[in-house]
Length: 403
Image (cartoon, rainbow, N blue to C red; front, side, top):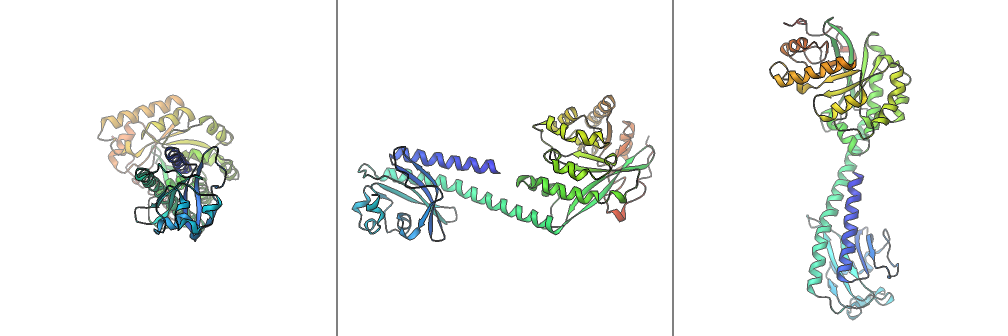
């Protein structure tokens, strides 16, 4: 988000410089009309021009050329402002003095006047003509569109931040736990903690977390949900583990290490949820090294869903590889899915990792997985996510023998 803002600002600044140079003016600026004042949002001046304007500065709107151009009291183009009777009513005309002056309104698509796009010099320029003002209007229209888009993004950003902060402060989320089952023994060996949001608007959890990443609240949201999930650890059977989801951006932060420090790490597993490549695997490996040394397991989520998960597996050498639901959905009917799943299973065997199949919903899928010698799985067939007081003591599916 911040990078986008910087790019827009750089584009507008470059446009302002180009227009000033093209028209041969000493000064160019974009002003916003705000609370009865004219605020200079962007300023460009020639190297030999005096520093009479500064970005962020302001003056009374009514005492400006800009207001008079917008309401029609001054023309958009003046070859010499000192020859215009209305301009002479403003002290600045003779004080600077103002010579050549071009100014056009900056309007948004809904007709709202944001401010003005202006160029001027301290000296007259009798060569200025209607073509020059048309040029200025063209650049002003392009700039107005960029600024409108930026303001809309900024407004959307603020709404998302406000929404997320309200959800976190009000605790409008809860944790459910989904069983992870050892198929051969028909036993629950662990639980994955999943977040469910009750705040408005109603959306799936991935949308909430994706929005948090967009507005730099990913770490904060992940930490509060992980903290709440950890509160359930003492209520889970002592011979089971708790799997927690975290993005690489959060995993490398000391705040996560501090949060996990007070819990039995040999009963915890951290699932890497990122679906894009990680820029610095070495930093991530170093961050989790002490946690893994104390018994915490590492899992790569959604294996088989894209290139990123394969890179995670190769770089991070996880204890657990979780087969993505997209493979499981068609594993009993699609040769390609079985082949890819089989390759991942063989890879896990060679590297000392274990496999967990996600999203098992049918007996046919379960039977196909057993043929592939997958021993651990989770999904609605085996157990739905549930609150602590509703957790099953045994897997839901009793058809554990496939053939």
